[in-house]
Amino acid sequence: MKLSRRLDGWLFALLLLAGAGALGFFSARYAHVSDWTANGRLSLSPQSRAVLAKLAGPVEIVSYASPQGDLRAQVAAFLQRYQQAKPDLALRFVDPQQDPARMRELGIAVDGELILHYHGHEQRLTELSESDVTNALERLIRGNDRIVAFVTGDGERLPSGQGDADMAALMDQLAQSGLRAVPLSFAQAVAVPQGTDLVVLASPTSDLPTGAAKALVNYVQDGGNLLWLRDPANDDLGLKPLADALGVQVLPGVLVDGSGAALGLADPRLLAMAQYPANPVTLGFQLATRFPQVAALARTGTGGWTATPMLRSSAQSWTEFHPIDNAHPTAIRYDAAAGELKGPLDFGFTLARLSPSPDKREQRAVVVGDGDFLSNAYLGQGGNRALGERIFNWLLGDDALIDVPREGVPDRVLRIGQSELDAASLGFMVVLPLLLLIAGGLIAWRRRRA
Image (cartoon, rainbow, N blue to C red; front, top):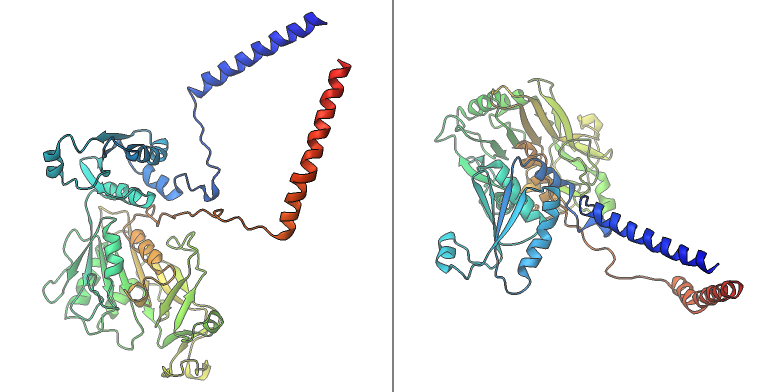
């Protein structure tokens, strides 16, 4: 009996050593990482992984961080998740105190500043977050800034204007992702300049100069990408040839929605959206957006475009033809006899087709019957900013660069009711001691039998 027990002990020790050796052998050759945190907040988002997949070749990140303190450890720990997804992403540390003259030459002023190098291009970062790093990597993929030309001179929304109707807030944000807004005045130019990646026609309020519509049509016919923000208006401002080229027309009247009262919206002209048609721009988009003063759109089916609805009003909406009293905006009724159209009605389209340009694969355009939702006044409402970024990224072919979510921690506060508290108290004060007593009794009983 004693010999058998001794052999069992030696066999157990040998198996334990063999298991530990096998574990060490395989762990040196294979790696597996699991993120059990809520929302996977310690892992890269699918958007960041998609951007990393587009990087062909090694990436070097140089961190100018002092060796004192734990800054280097924080940088290395944060970038490790990127290195796990892209093994040829290298991190190198440089002590900025060793060569102050060199640091001044490089313009390094912040301890911990990062410079990302890829295919002869570089991007600088002074803050460390997934959104900042991923956007910097996307700018490296682009190589050079994307040129976005804003048509100006006819009352359009200005990309650098600080007025409520302008779009500086959005363009300042997009500039961090490598977009450069430039003015385009057809009073000085007869054509869209070469090298323009996107033209934005943002809600002109007066007739465009003679030849402007022709220049825009030529740009579209040559394969250029276009964002056209249209507001409710009875006059086409000389842009009917452009509308015909895109196969989109504006329906008369102002789109109003009677369901807004249930959401606390006093003005039916302010449309609130929480659900969207199936569209590449809004795929997976779950934020609510708001659109004031909307014009409904309709497709004419010309131009060879594949048109996909992007924004659609509810079944309680209609195109209001009668003047709306701002003091009593809800005093309106649907009037079928006047020709008003009942919803749901589309007021945003994405258009795509095989590009006529030999150096492009696909041509894209977006037409929205509202420009206010991207203005400085309304950009901060709901998901307007995120939707605007998605529209620009889709138009520029950067489908992977979507707003990287900043996942929060849902379990910072423990909320427990009285019934759960009673159950926990009973478990710790009665159930757990009983289980320990039963386990102890079973162990003592087995030892007496041995």
